[in-house]
Image (cartoon, rainbow, N blue to C red; front, side):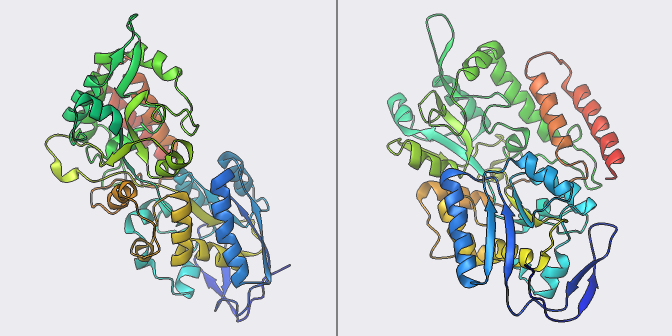
Length: 433
């Protein structure tokens, strides 16, 4: 079935080499079938379905075929090959640069302009990772940010009354709360400094120092921004003090990040960098856990950074292979720009709303813990990774470098970062950045 479209067709800008045509006005009536692919499963998929139910209730002649629990890699491959997907919801902001530049996701600007969508209502920072080179090929479908979660019971037992605000305090409290078994192995970690553990990614450490990823000309900034060296040296010293091999063995025995035996859930790690969604998992998996949430600790000489976090979340777009782009746009617009829909999704998933109107809605459920994340998402110094033509490659290259550096195999940090920048610059050139 096809969407009813009224009005003459007009030409509009497109993210690929082919011309994109859309109707002069939105359809007066929506009807037909549209597909939605997303990665959520279980409890979270039910939340998404509840919003889809609202869309269908408002449009009784529309059927949404929902494909939940789809692996993100599969979603990207099907879309890239022009497969039969109308709307794709991905957790990977890394696809944006590639999908915008190749047209794998269609340019939404013509639809946005035609329907006079209020883009000022969208959190400005999220537009950095949902568009590329002027092409808005995705819209944010909630976002993630980070904070420090800490076990209040263990804090109280140690007589610690306040969470750390600086990297020095994070180190000192982390070491104080780290205990060892008789054989010298780790029994409990105050804080796990290893890159690669749960949410300990380079982009998340960036929020602690305000480090930048690209300079004003779009070149990699890892060697030239001193904030990177500062946080890497702090992290490496922390690892060395505990012992890399000990940390590796301890971490290898911990539960999976999203399982009920997550290391924070069971008290094996006392303080943890994590996202706002963890509040929902804790309520579901360990409702009796006494925990607190505080902003991420920051470098000692930059107190103005305190309160910031990282930003990066789900993105949704219309696949190039969609035969029903008007209906796909209507569904996408509802899920990402309708205030009530965004609030409902945020309440159920405990992700951060990406609309100012949703953040200010009296219907948004806000606990003391969740509020810390809401404030971080709106902080002027929160960081996000900009979209690039090579997708996630540059972030993966940096993560690989840091993961190797923390082992002690690479001695010269400045030289390593300089080489890394050169490699990434070459990759950018090959990708057409």
